[in-house]
Length: 336
Image (cartoon, rainbow, N blue to C red; front, side, top):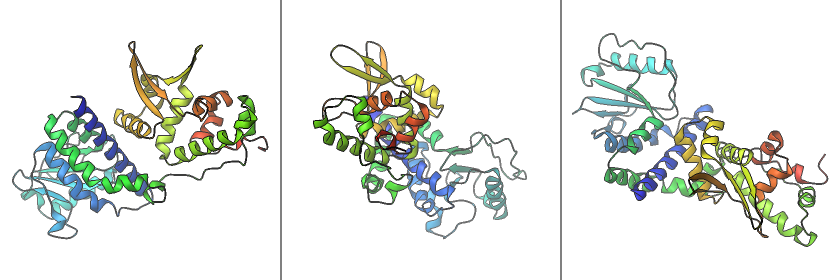
């Protein structure tokens, strides 16, 4: 069961990263990646719902209205990153115009980003039934259904996803790749962090090591997407510093973070997995206290993230500028 849960979390992480890329490119009017998504999600939809979808664009380029079709079960799917009502109206109109309702009795709109709360009614001219509550789905809804599948099916989907996205995962890990820079920013790092070091009473002989340590952390944080940096900021801003005689614990409470960010559970898990792989957070459940341990160890045994929280006096804007905007000028003694 634990192995299956880990496999699902990896599926969630991969699809969450993909969804973010679709969102980012969609905002910029770039839809080139959507074509590659058709065959990818065709396989996942088939495994999840036991359909027999085929990529219709393989036999006819720019197939009208729909991308995937299962003639045996009379189900078809359009894959799109556009989530507007007008886009759905347009798809239904084309579906009817090309008499596709005679071949398929169910049309599904699969949105690669997020669906909206659609209040409009979609006119099918009584040619076929279209239920906006179940026939418009997105990645979150797909993940919910995958989570409920049998262990062997989850393992099958996990194998496919990790295999298909192995190149993507490598590109995301490559600091020089375009994908790794989808939403990165430029790190603004001063030539000294003396103000920060003096605040924490570091020995001057350690200044060089600590400067390098904070610089490395800044680059590590910058490699995260902005959404994951926002998640990390929430952990630090809402985090609890528990000092005792021998050590310091720095942690955040999962329910508090969920309430503070108010984003879907799948996104929370996705960001957690990304930070976990980066070594910035771990999950602990000791003495019935579920907590997210925040980690950024320094060469001399300190926690850089708790030190940044203390240095800024947990000032929201100052801390946000450091973690999300990657601007560390406030740590310098010549900051103007």
